[in-house]
Amino acid sequence: MREVMDGIKRAADVLRNGGLVVYPTETVYGLGADALSERAVKKVYDIKKRALGEPISLAVASYEMLEQVAYIDSWELIRRLLPGSVTVLLRKRENVPDILTAHSKLVGVRLLVHPVAVQLIKSFGSPITSTSANISGSPPPRKVDEVRITADLILDGGVCKYGLPSTVVDLVNMKMIRKGANYDEVKMLIERSG
Image 1 (cartoon, rainbow, N blue to C red):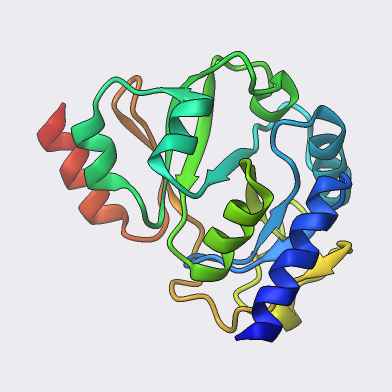
Image 2: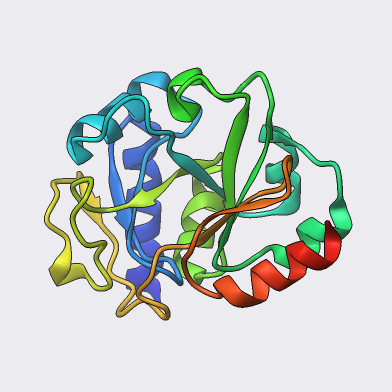
């Protein structure tokens, strides 16, 4: 356990210095950088060979941190969807850099469950990028030995529970955006709420 906590502390330091960390989530391995730093987010785009017009989500470790980056219209719905394997699109706050959202007024947010990811974000003290640790268009890694990109540090959390990217739902326009983990139950919840 101490070894894991030491790894998380080192990873948080990497993030503070503008670096990139590969970290486990309940869906797939993510590529983390300081989500509120334009320079760090640009590194994520470069490493993934991702087009700047494609937004990147961010991950938080608490409802309080979520409220720091997005406007919440329905806490009841948020609490039914998060935490978990869902990315929700919400209206972004002014502190979220345009590069992260591809100049959209919406930001994708995940409230993670995986203990290593949650501890990493808490230790860093701010949201991190939440995008799969792969070259854009290639399969997302479910375990460390499937990671094919270069990062400053990799946190090994074993095999990801779902092995599928998160389901993405737009809570501003109340529509499903991407099919992923737990899609059917999320879709049913959105249909009931709409």
